[in-house]
Image (cartoon, rainbow, N blue to C red; front, side, top):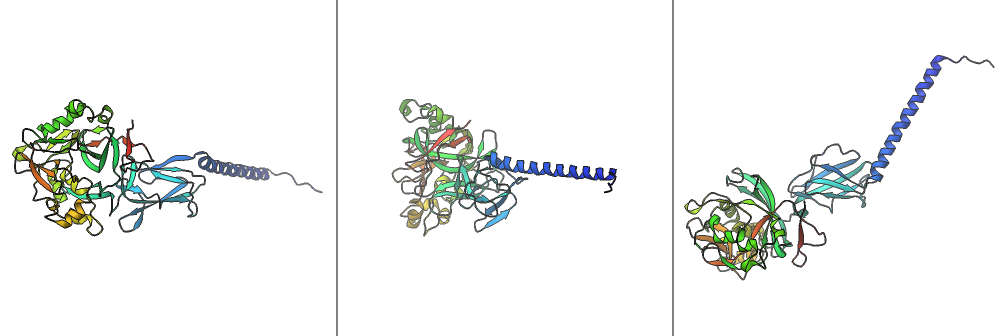
Length: 421
């Protein structure tokens, strides 16, 4: 047998082949290692926050409901929406993997747990709603619960004229909006736009005490200037705030005071003739006041507005909430308008059938009058020196959160709050 001489070019060819095989092996090993390391070792990961970027081996499809249908879009919504956890799911090849859990944080970050397979796709469905004290709450369009409210703010004080702002308000006869605050039951009015101490408009949760602290005069001097009112001083520097005197039992605790946000309260005046909800809202944020009284006040504790009362109605199945909002609150009284009374007043959790309630808003055509909510369900004027039920109202700091998942916000199971550092 004649042997062939080993040629140098054969040696070169073999070297190239060996190098290619080694490279393929290294790349394959890296891919396998990456796949198993990421999806088996890491049981949870903060995947994405805000606009969609390269998600690696987890893919997302965002569907946003516009009120009628789900529409796919590239970017994840970052405000006024929450995740519909019943419809959202992750998996491979379009199949749901129930071991994978997806949650949306109140900073609009997606948090995924339980991923064990590469190329997982998450179909995320978003609906109108808000994070209330860190808890995602879906908005509804009928019944008792959280409603989306969009209105024009024309104040020129906290927003530019004509700016459409969205807020979320609890409405209904008795929605699940109870919290334990100051060792008492308080109720969430909603997530409301307000100017904070750093002069920026931000959303804060607004709460009011469930029960009155007593019948008290708005201002014993009979002048409707909240910046100088005796009630303002009682609530912010006096016995209620310092938990002394008659308020040693139900004044503010030190831990409660740490949760309160100091904000700019709009104290524009209104009149009973323009008493649609949006009329009240606009007037409260306007600069019309009697005798050039201040139209803003910086502080911690005040009262709810007439607009808060109006937005708290859910209407009924036969008389929609929007019908209530488009009717004069001044006529929400049985003798004037039985329909509004039966459908608007009886389904408004801020109404008190036993008491007249002072509001924060003064009447603009007189220096001694303010607007209060009557036990009949309508709004009427009253002099500031007269006494009415007082429900302290305030805004909570942004880092106040609901700390228990087993409570549902009902009267018997109010949400517990904690200041998260």
